Length: 413
Image 1 (cartoon, helix red, strand yellow):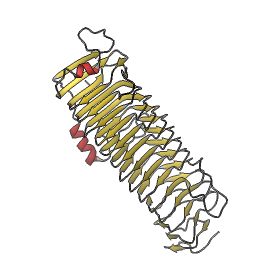
Image 2 (cartoon, helix red, strand yellow):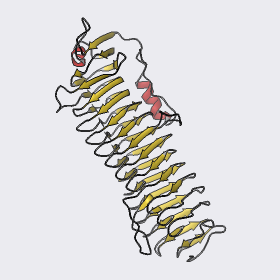
Image 3 (tube, one colour):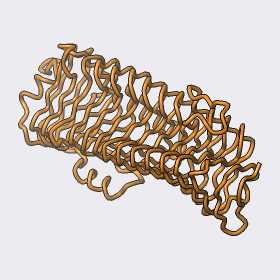
Image 4 (cartoon, one colour):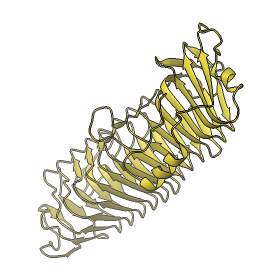
């Protein structure tokens, strides 16, 4: 019997709490067998039929084989329930395509383990303070979100979500953990969205197959908003999405360490609307091909790599590689604050390396490298202020630089 697994390195205070809720399901008081083909004597032919025979309080398990199955599964008020494949992959199609394939309401310690393929219908919803884990499943061709979570605790690992009509994962409140080995691709909207709750992306350790991949979606790769928090660590690849790679707006905090933000058509990173962003050891490359840098003295008002706007703040804490983007490398605008702790590389961007405008401030606490950019290593307008060590930024045009150590002063070309 497969045991539930979710604990990885990362935010141990939250993941520890989640682990305590999603305990291993090793010995089940009730074990129902489903064979959707009808070939197994005495077995149920649908998950819904098996559920109807089980007590609400577990531990209970349902093992599924055969298929394809035709079902719309409702799990309401259950605790300590596992639904998993008996071995080979089983496809579940909707009996009613206008309903969710799987609904989990007001339930605790629900484990859904593959290989299971949820194909079509309105995807999966987890609601009403439920706690659920998904491992080894595929969700495809949903006409709504792949997974929709509302005020619940959800963990997803070793799974794929493809071709959703709305976001692959959409969460409001609670927490959503994407816990390694997850691919979200081909959607007609964003890859992942989170409002008001806590999004956790814990990618792999570099071993193939352990990374999270959010790619080729028609909206943003990852978007958090409305006082949400996002913690992104490990091997996460956010690439080739049609809008912004990673976005935090409307009084939101986003922290990212490690991973790659590559070749998104919009800006790689957007921090706006009084939000906070903090990044280290991330590659932000090849973004912004839909952003053009104009021929005026200052930029187009957007970056290709990273931007902080609308009274927000952005920290780049070291080992950032913001290179080969199609407009400015890092852009601060509209009374925002950019803080660099040094050791970052901002090279070969089509516009400026750093562009500071409209009452914004840039703090350079230590040296950065910015070479080969299409215009200046550092440019700022007369309303903005640059402080700190800019001694390694050799192609600079700024009216107001307050130096520390060997920092530069005045206009430089």
